[in-house]
Length: 477
Image 1: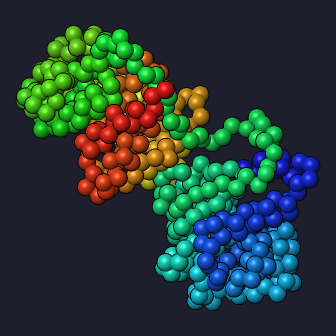
Image 2 (image 1 turned 180 degrees about the horizontal axis):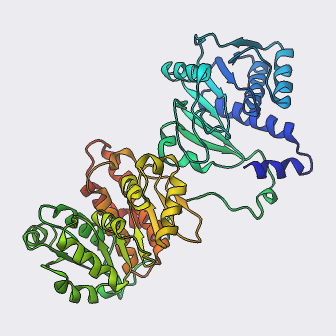
């Protein structure tokens, strides 16, 4: 973003002041769009250029006849020369300025222009106090470029941070605001490009890209089950049969032509009762897996697998085939114990599993989810889906993709097993690992949003799985 801003300032007719004026004007238009009836507006202006954007917005509000006040943390003039210029213009037009004294002024809307994209530390002192009071006021907050206290690069929230109702980002969207803890702070988002010329982006690679909606071919009328892939689900140690039921059902609902299941004998009857379309096989050891592995196009390895001797034997036999494979759940824990490259695989860890795979703690992963996903893909030489709010899909040599779909109702048991079945089906149908991981993540999240229309709390993995056929229909060319 700094490089793009620098290039923009060098373009004909654009300088730093022009960009700031455009940003402040765009923010004012967003405020009018979101809260057209707001009369009393309070803007907190920080000491640098993010504060300058706030001063410009305040001038527009003043010219529009609104009851506008600017609040500073102290009585020192802005440290940025450009922000000082915008502050002087606002004051010269008769605008009111107050210094924060611990009390929140009355307002209809608050504008957060405290800190911008460069802030990566926990807020302290009066800044933290103002943020706490702003959040406690329950008033709608418009954040300029980034909610203060959120790291725009990583999405990490190291301390107190603004809970915005809307965040307007300038020039381009910030990758960190699309994943992790940041999602509880940004509210609705929009991007004001500030009319920066497209040439300013030439040769620059984005930190991430939005996960695209898949485009899937329509099935031929002359179809048969052999055309749509054979998935083998491996797992279901004693007492953990539910996971393989969900994974196999998700594979079938994603359109797999055939689904086989290798599991403990005591789960076979339950599986046949719940989902008779899946072919259940009792497997006592790795030797009983050989024929099933030979017939499969792709593997779903890990749902309910366990970590005992039986589990390890099946895990090693499956990886030895080199077949396209989704590695999830206990299979990820076994991989963490015995790390190796798995270029034929898609790893689907939640943050705790990702931490074990990287040899760090979960907080370290969540502090920089983008970097964690990319480190996993490099270390294991494969595609990775780092699950969680704003799931990330990474692979060596690829731009990391961020999911903008999904909802909190998906925070329940079995959702990961469903994702494993979805991605395994796409692998079995011939998609490469990165594309299968991307498409599968999109389909899974979108199906979750469909299921959540009936309510988020109490939503089950089975509810999501039931929505997969309709979600696939959205993507059929």
